[in-house]
Figure 1: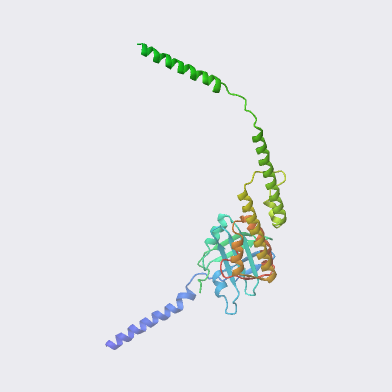
Figure 2: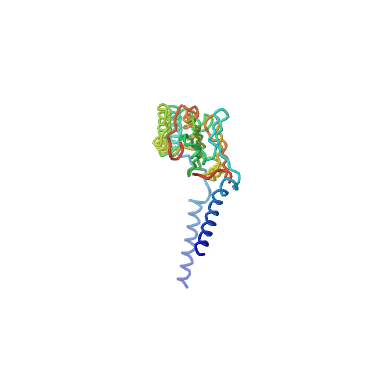
Length: 136
Length: 159
């Protein structure tokens, strides 16, 4: 009698575990987007989500997205795609709104930036959303 | 009583003398007298100011890159007196510009931009204005975006 109860508890626990594994991530979760690093040197814009840039593909060891702000309110953004094309812009003494945008960039967020012919950053957009995959 | 009268007489005499002194020495404002020595000193000061402004213009034109002309005073601006410490500061800034331009040129020539270059450039540009910094790094950014310079920077972007 005791053995039968033990089996039943074990089977129940196993079933719960399997259900959690099956339904937890892929079927019941919300929208998921992946946006690899995209650079357009003609229109002078770069974008991508940091998570995909970091761990998009095992064949991609080049992708990179980065923005930096320092104590002089100077902003630097940099993007490198999977083929190694790089774009970079800087804005010394950037407007506070641009600094704020960079500071809001999450490690698994989305980044989009534009620059002009001299390489000066002209626009920075950062986004935090549940649909960007968490950093791996 | 006599003594009292004497004292009064002395006081009246003293007041009278003071009044006379005022009338003689300080009574009416006089026209300022032009001191030739002061005039000479003023002309020397003005000459120094003009010379200093001339030296600064020369420095801006010879030592600094083309963009330094932006910082140089325009021809229509009257020369202002500049102290010796300002000249030294201007010389230091001109040196900073020259060093920073040299670092950027070296990076472009080598085709690589490394953490070391970033550190050197940041140090060389200390004291320069944001506009000047932006101007100095422009050729570097253009070279990076033209894929002529490879970014090998791990920390701090390319600032």
